[in-house]
Length: 176
Image (spheres, rainbow, N blue to C red):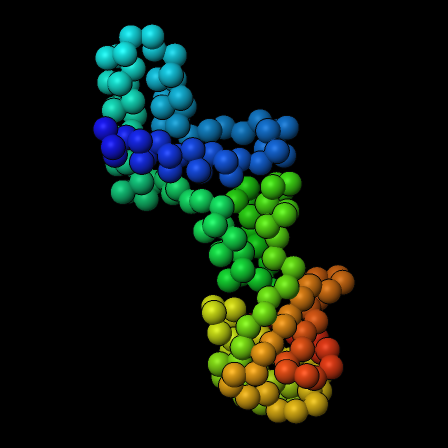
């Protein structure tokens, strides 16, 4: 019974990710989820419990097979942060939700793990905390070193501006 409650809570967490925009334009829920919700309508306690047990078992099996994936908002935020600087696909988990908009990553702060000079005086910087590898497009006041603080934010027209240490702002682009 405890497993039933845990699985149901995981499903509820996944459902909270449903967007307001998706509510406006109908989308098809997975059949396994619909069957679980249908169990609520069964008046007989034993029948309802049997229905829940069967539905939860099917959902658990589908998750084991990776046919469905259950994520919570925290995991989506972490994923968005790790993907900052890349263009994300247009799927409901990452875009188009007013709730998701408040979680949108507009800026990252990290530190330099590895810095190396690339073409024309620009720099390639691998950042800590899974923040990726970025290249500068502009002159930095000083050569970046491991441990230097980096701040990168969204700018206009899909570009990114950032600073390394106390340098003035330069354009950045995510390469990895």
